[in-house]
Image (tube, rainbow, N blue to C red; front, top):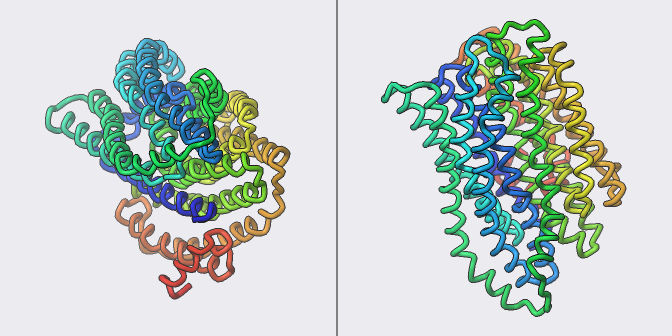
Amino acid sequence: MSDSNKLVRGTFFLTLATLITKILGMLYLIPFYAIMDGEENLALYGYAYTPYTIMLSIAAAGVPGAVSKYVAKYNALGAYQTSQKLYRSSLWVMVGSGLLAFIALYIAAPYIANLQTLAAGSGEGSWSAEDITRIIRIIGIAVIIIPFMATFRGIFQGFESFGPTSASSVIEQIVRIAVLLGGAYIVIYVLGGTVQTANEVAVFAAFIGGLGAIATLLYFWRKRRPHIQKLVDSDDTGYDFSYKEMYGEIIRYGIPFIIVGISIPVIIFIDQLTHNNGLALAGVPSRYHDTWFGMLNLTTHKLVMIPTSLAAAFAITILPFITKNFQRKQMDDVHHQIKLMIMMLLFFAVPAAAGMMILSAPLYTSFFEYNEVAIQILLFYAPVSIIISLFSITCSIVQGIDKQNLTLYVVLAVLVVKLAVNIPLIMQFHTVGAVIGTALALGLGVVLNLWIIKKYGKFHIRPLMKPLLQIGFYTIVMLLAVEVVYLLLMFYFDVEQKLDSVIILAITVPIGAVVYILLSFRSGLADEILGARADKIRRKLRFL
């Protein structure tokens, strides 16, 4: 199978798995929102997840991505024994790293909680430092196993095998959601427990989900192990690196992965530290602070992460291929893969984000309840998902062309801009200001990454212009069609009612999808991006 076919196939599996996990991650919020009775009670859940995500990135130390890159690099050179030596030891390293990170988060939890409480203020309904400390310590248990799981996935990805990552991510999400919803419901409605305890059970579900993912990966490893062992036995390169040499290289690879991995969580953490203060300076009553923060950090964020999740799948898929071809000096293949990934990402992400923007009212109402503030946040947040996606994938490309050291400066620039503009923007535009701050900061990051790719990867942006203009034009036509239908439906349905909003989405979303797909396939844009798969789709859907 050619690299292009492998790339598209791997992207397809990971994208499908990522979409399934993100859709599940969005759908579970409907019953969870009802169980927890609103955004304010969900804020505690958000306060726990951000420091957990940051510590998780530090605990993993960039090793999962670095292992994927390392294995791909030495497999390309035929040095399978070298890659085996690395990935065997890396799993044990991650077990130790996870334990140390759990201890560190456990000790740091009160200080993080006090910082968040100070930033959040002490208004009516605010969570105490003790509440936040306890829930951070509970979710920290998952830090013990998740780095091990992520590194296990990185090993498979280094062998250009993306099925195990896809399957394990779906299993992880299903198990996590089942424990989260079942546990929260039992605590509140069967045992008569508190919302705090329900939140604690909900975050502990991350640990149980991780165990489910590890069990899935072990199943695939038993199946793939004989094939991998044959590759190892065929190694006659004579490479023999010491652990010091290997981990020196892993550290060089890993640090940029840490920096990129924590960039989005740190941006969210900046929102946590500045959001309520910014609202207070703007004169917004404290009773709205946690509710609006819950909308920003959880409800609208979950919806926006669906188109953004495409970037995560593409970034994981592209790294081994670009690394391999860059090491072999096959620059034409590198350029083709960069172009293909950016076009494929935008082909899906742009219409999804635009559709989410125009249908923000029925979309939010369908999953939660009608709320003008939340709908306004989603209206602005939806297009920002394109910038988040581009940032993710361009960072992965920069790492693939061996310029990962430059990502430090890119991420620092992003965080400095976010810190500088966030409070002034929140004072001016309230919660929407935090979204605008994220867009400005990550937009700068995308521009800097593209400059690095152009300069050091010798990649030319010009070949992207025509397909990008086509994607933009077809998206506009799609939006016009959806807007006409949406306005007509408004005469018969009330967007403030949940059932009516679901009906509106059930009619408008398929119409938008059909218009965009028709234009893309009839013009040949789909063939340029999807390759042979476009013909297979065309044969199955004869109207194309």
